[in-house]
Image (cartoon, rainbow, N blue to C red; front, top):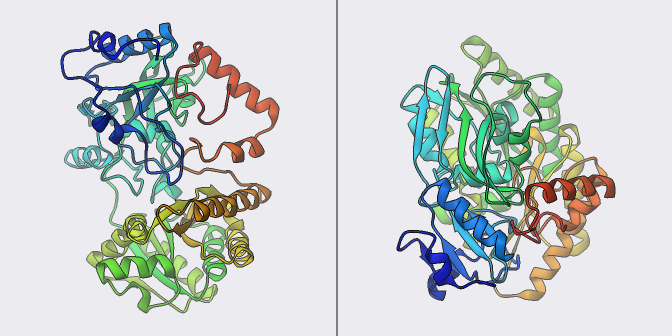
Length: 458
């Protein structure tokens, strides 16, 4: 770092710059197992966009790296500190600035927690759909950075589909407004959409304007247990072919079910080896008809047991259990989590390839999936501190990524590239397309200070 923390502290009010190594350590990395990180030189906690701009301009002038951080719930290493960097924590920028029921939009700071926004919208009869499994903790800024999805994105889309506008600090320290608050616009390039999913490499988001939907209809839940992953995958393919678009279609395998059972004693493994959870939210009789169709698809694929759930509390508990899978596995060791996405009709084939890969390497690959949109999350649990097993797990998942790309898939559906998917991204994108990415980054970040060494190298 070519400046001193005391100089940096002079830019912000007292108490907003942290330099104590003990406190810096908690800002050094996200939840990506095994991703490299370093201790930052300082952590700043701005309260408005002017303070963010002052910090970025200062760092750009001195060539100091800047890493943006939300709640640190990421799974790709995208928020990991690099040596000598300044971490910008948005924890203090956590205000919901406006919820407009007439225009159906919300304006929020990046530190607002996803579930807090959803609750505030619900109180006004509105709904913000993106709901990653980390929604109780992850922030809107982090969701924007990774283009987060969630359980209902099969029908309602991901974060990018709800971002109308952004306020952003560029790598020059300039504050710019992108996008719109109108229902539509054809004025210029879609720069706001470009920033969504850019993982802090193009700019630091300081305000987000989000599209909202009206209150949703009551959901109807269909539950199915299957003997193995390929047959559950066939059920997913049948649902896709039927034309029904469920509001959720989630898969959890036996290893994950057992991990939750051992923690919460919910009896999830009693029904079979693989659980499929579907929800339909078309209003009235149409919703019931959709649920009947999904049930028929489950049965046609050979479900060991399937039924429409008549108990809303029981259905909610099953979906809550789905969200508990990752923390349940963390109780067993270090969790390596993948985030591949394949064409929906090829979900059965991808599951078959996962099983063959696991067999070939003599490992157990646990699986959860947003199965309705082909977004699979295969996982490996390795002993904490075992570098050899960690390296082995990474090798297994490189093969998994190769299999997904071979099926016309992508290396990440919602977690982002960060540090862990850089090799995969280089395989997925052509050299010409990677050069386009690099060229865009140079325009937004001419000093190369924003989240350097992540996503792709300049």
